[in-house]
Length: 331
Ligand SMILES: [Zn+2]
Ligand SMILES: [Zn+2]
Image 1: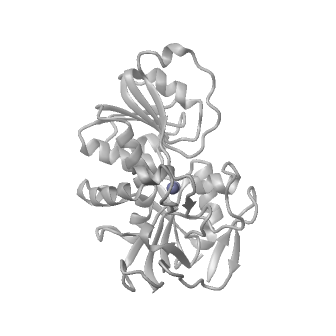
Image 2 (image 1 turned 90 degrees about the horizontal axis):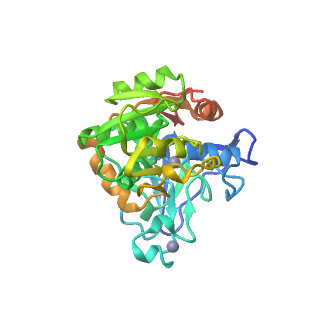
């Protein structure tokens, strides 16, 4: 099979040919038909996250058809379309696993980070952490739901019930969250890279009541803000835009350092919190919710061999919506 492999952080992915793996007990082998490109992949490739198993095949928004099944798997049938997300394994024994917070497991395995992921023709996964996918979506469209959608959903829940919602960074996750939030009757304010008119137009096309640069003041005090851009300086900016009692949620796995800020912008019972990973419950909940909104997913597709180009476009903010690799698309 073909795979794009990271050998050392900070170097481009390398195309390799390797033996197709066989499923062990409890595992499924899927023929990958689409794999989304998430900002977390970029953090792995760039070395911002340091726990990668190397060499590693990135990719944790995997859509595949079950090709082979290991012993003991009764959940899926050959040919069935399944999704494989970031949460690839948990220990099942730690405090967090036993208290319904498996996203915080002390000994997790993440897809495309410690477990080879979906930038490949085939991928192996623990069947217990894989999901049937709603038939309403094409392979390419459903892929970004598996992380941008799931993490976005979790972040939106953490943001509370407030009406006036700010989204900082309008990429794959925000474009999904904006649609869900609007469906819930909220008002979405989109903060993009200063001067990024294309992203601002995109946000307005998805129902944002306001879109502007992250250096511009919000036109209305926010009840909550979710920060998807990996920029620590946005934390004090979002706090300044948020009303007393408001919540600022950091939705990414990595952020540059948060600069010092005056206590006065946190005062008034504002809170700042992060969102880490996902639970299988989040996945079941969101994959059921998405078609009812319905969430429309905007994708730009790339051949598997063009993974480095897709990552470069994401790094530079030159994407509208989500990038998705299609192993069967000609390079
Ligand atoms: Zn655990
Ligand atoms: Zn992700």
